[in-house]
Image 1 (cartoon, rainbow, N blue to C red):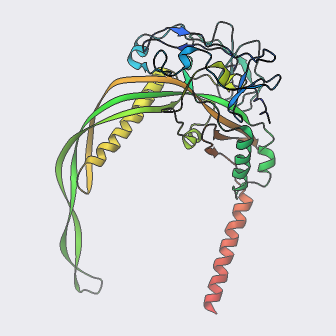
Image 2 (image 1 turned 90 degrees about the vertical axis):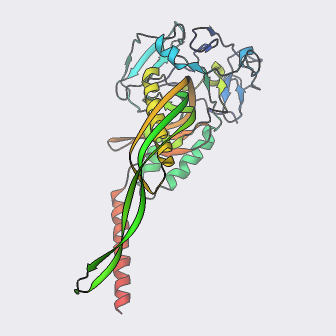
Image 3 (image 1 turned 60 degrees about the horizontal axis):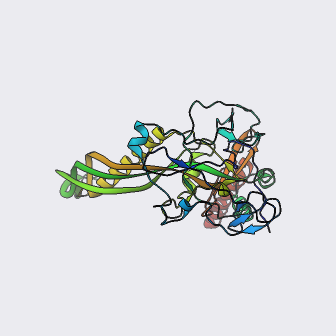
Length: 398
């Protein structure tokens, strides 16, 4: 059965955009166009189908196996298929010429602030992320860095709908009308923007290591009798050390449409092993969000995350039973980045005056969601517990 085509409305880069794939040296502005896959039967543009894991014509239903449309997409020909970009060079000299194409229209949701880029005369009707109809024209002063690679959808809409139904069914304290209210909105497949960062880190640390020891203390109890007890003491000694670590594809979301807490719960995305070179066939017919967390901000967030992980690793090296005054001096070299797209299934719904999202990892199937609570059900559960406690107390008395 051919999978239903996802909606095109909302905060997206139009799925038909033939974005260039970046090639050449790290940080360079060289681009090459990605070829197109015409349907062998009707000539229409083939689109990626998650259920069939193949290219499918949306017009006549013809199925074609995936074949790279450009020699650079083949591993081993012309170097690596996915190139790490030099971060320092990109921050020092912004890359030019990597845009979504001259013929485009940009819009922004006035509710969640997500930005869309549309081509081929298409326009947004509602925001895929928050459902707001408040979509206005937006003019970007600088071209966005376009994605070089992506993870294609592997989980179909049919599979994800079934997982969401199971998720709804397991929410015991959700309102009884939740299933009907939430499933009235269409499940949407979206490609979300992510940044990945690599870095060789070296850290020197120093701290005070605490070693426990015990002394015997005499004291007088409430009856006036002398007693003894063991009292824990800490002996503090200076400690220091160093470590080396390689951060490989540290993930930083570039989206503002999807809720950050939910994204963290459906990670990881296997960007280290399964990335594919960007090709329009993968995203044509799907919704793609343009990033609003730019490279400079994402790099700063990524370094903060690396610093926190390094601190944890250094803390684990401190000897003894406890520690204090840990100081970490970290250095980062060989920093690189990639701008990638990851597949996410999204349901947005409103219940009462509040809005909720459910996100599903379109590659692994991991699911996370928000839901309202039925205070009536919670009150009944509390009453039931109190009743059981009271019955137990009466039985014990008898």
